[in-house]
Each structure stands twice: as structure tokens, then as C-alpha cells.
Image (cartoon, rainbow, N blue to C red; front, side, top):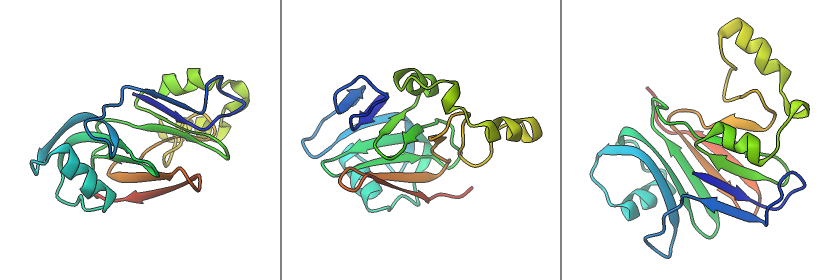
Length: 163
């Protein structure tokens, strides 16, 4: 799944690119990976609960991406079994479940490398927090809800589920 929003100097695309989204309803588009074991809910009910941050009782190995007219919602399970990666700066928002797809689509190169992440990897075997080896390219932390506002171009990231 790949989603890109806003035009930019980095990408040779029109303002929006979507790959792999499903749309069963006119209210929103979505992508899901994995399985929500409990509670048993329709995709409309899951969307409504994610939008209202009412997901305390979700059990499973899952991640969801929802897009409506104003917002994008990305949710991961508490173990982070299935990863989401996102790129965000002043003018760009891009999300995918494939790290290298973002790197290739945005044409990230050596100028975009975040050297601190390599230092952290040498000490701890991986970059800390939600960092990757590239500036502005991060991992959505496990058990989190990321909300991107299309109108204000702002992200809020909230830990929803704790292990």
C-alpha cells in the first residue's frame, strides 16, 4: 500500500497518488493488513471507532489506514507486528507499509541520510524512537494512532495501546 499527498519538488507526481486502497463506502477509503480478532466489527464500525479513538478493546495483529475528506488515520496493533512507515515535512505526507517504496518514490539519497540513526544502531542495534536512516521518514510506533489533517498539514501521533 502506498499513499502520497501534496505536490512537491521531490516527487514527479500530481498532488495525490494512491495504490491499494479499497472503497466500500463513499465516506472513506481504507486499507487493512492482518486481522482484528476481537471485537467482531464491520469496516464501518472500525472506522467510526478509530475516528473516535475508541480502540482499547481491539485485539489482533492488524494495521489500518483510513482516509476521509479531511483526515488520514493510521493505526497499529500493540505489538507492531505489521509496520507503517511515513514521510512528513513542510509540504509532503507519504505513507506505506513498504519502507523501500517510499525511499524510491521520493528519490531519497545520501543527502537525506540521518547520521544519528547509524550511531544509535551501532550502540543499540536499531535507531531509537520511531526514526529510520532517513530524515523525515519514520515508523508509526506500535499501539499508536497517527492522524494527518489535510487542511492544516499537521500530524498528531498518540499512543493508544500499551503492552
